[in-house]
Amino acid sequence: MDELKACPFCGGNDLDVRDEGPSFSGHRYHVACGDCWAKGPLTQEQDKAAEEWNTRPGEDAKLKEVVFAAWREGYIEENTTAHLMGIGTSELYRMLDTEGELDPEGETGDEW
Ligand SMILES: [Zn+2]
Image (cartoon, rainbow, N blue to C red; front, side, top):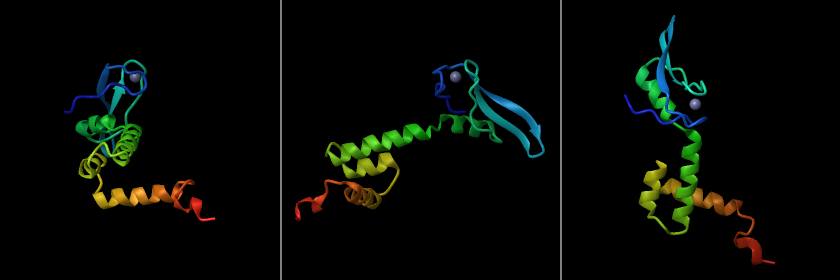
């Protein structure tokens, strides 16, 4: 089983995969924090419970934002960026286009 990440709510490491007991669809597991009683998503396998617990959508979004910005500033290669964001390079450029359209100080500024 993967190592459990610290609790996102209290930073505690008193973590356990707990068995919620049998239901008609089988046992259900989730990771629980012994410090603040936060609970991870319920799953049907212990490994999956750990995996879900270690998945932090908020962190991922933040990471992507940072990586994308670094690429736009020219700090990292497009291949590295695409890899870190888990997307293809064409998707990367499409995101760049979308950003341009949303930018109020875009290219149309001087036309008048
Ligand atoms: Zn906690």
